[in-house]
Image (cartoon, rainbow, N blue to C red; front, side, top):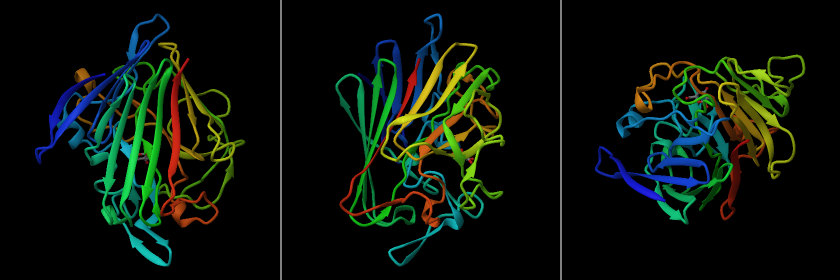
Amino acid sequence: MNRRLFGIMPDGIPVEEYSLRCGKLTCDIITYGGVLRSLAVPDRNGRPVDVLLGFDHLEDYIHQDKYIGALIGRYANRIGKGRFFLRGKDYKLAKNDGENHLHGGEAGFDRRVWTAEAVGENTLLLRLTSPDGEEGYPGTMEATVFYRLLQDGLLIEYEARCDCDTLCNLTNHAYFNLSGHDSGTLEHQRIQIFADYFTPTDEWNIPTGEMKDVTGTPMDLREWNPIGRYDHNWILRGGTADFRLAAKSVSSDTGITMETWTTQPGIQFYTGDYLDGCPAGKGGAVYRKRAGFCLETQLWPDSPNHDNFPDPVLRAGQVYRHKTAYLFR
Ligand code: BGC
């Protein structure tokens, strides 16, 4: 595994980049935000295509606010009104998305420099300690993420522990473009999501609490559909612990097909509608609205405020464990 200095944080902390290779796949990961900076996959002619949006310079990661490629914590997605009750206590979090809390707050896990350790050639282990009260969340949390590059894709394993009961919902915010990160928008790409229900939301993307059948709605992606405009959570089939196929996506330009597998109960499919205004991407690529899509495997949004949603509480002494794989066929 190669390692290099990627940049220096304004406070002097160095940020490193690790380059993983396995068979025909290569992947670059930086310690700032645990960002997946590139993932090159062969197209139908064997030519490598970088399918992830990313930047060449640390400054661009610091300046953008789209969570590009980053690990998200402590709670991915939204918490309505930035407020939750836990063990009889009322917690208030930053309102960094209108009146609501998004992706862990002003400086979530995406803004932290993680500690990295190479485990053999193909696996990078990242660790982070989040102090008690960080961004308003209770308890000291130890988070660990394994990025394992496989012959046919990338496996991400998440673990977390906390010294008291707290909330935990970790994901990755990679933006994929299966025609290549610099190919423009998503026109020639299609998606399937294996979900029979979704969680309808209000105009601020906060779930109403309902679980709605996708049949007869634009949320029915059980068959192949062109990638249009989406920013919703789907309720995945099967139990939380099952590692199962959640989504498939394909580019007719490159022939690259990606499968998303996960143990998580939900998936936020977001088609990059707020990408405008990004700094120039790798090699000067321009990332406009809908230049990439995210398949964020996670709990359902605002679970702390809905008793009928999956339990978002990580109990003291328990280990939070989830995994997600992006596999290429
Ligand atoms: C959310 C979007 C949000 C975006 C921020 C996504 O996970 O679903 O609503 O705008 O993150 O980049």
